[in-house]
Length: 103
Image 1 (cartoon, helix red, strand yellow):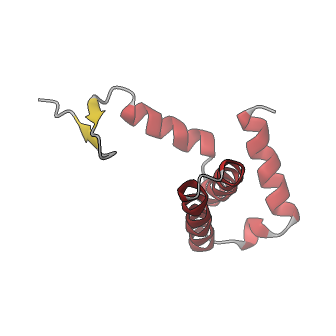
Image 2: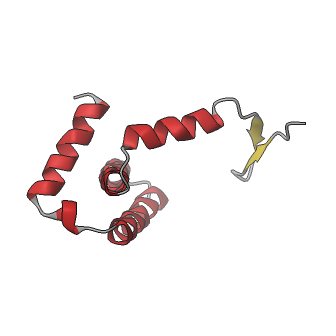
């Protein structure tokens, strides 16, 4: 499946279970944060199968959140990419990305 087809499939799955339209932006955000906690736990424990599953679960929540806000995951990702695509900087050894200041 393409990303667009998966996004539609997730929306259909969510409708079939009453998540859409009954969920709210807040409830989907809280669910995404909960799933991020599971992702962090899986990464911390080097559980690679669980990490992949948790990334998928977070993505499902983000698809629903985007839909409920009148957007799509693709649109949100495109907006974010347009913002970062020309960004320059470097990753420090501690994992912090430092943006290059444009003058």
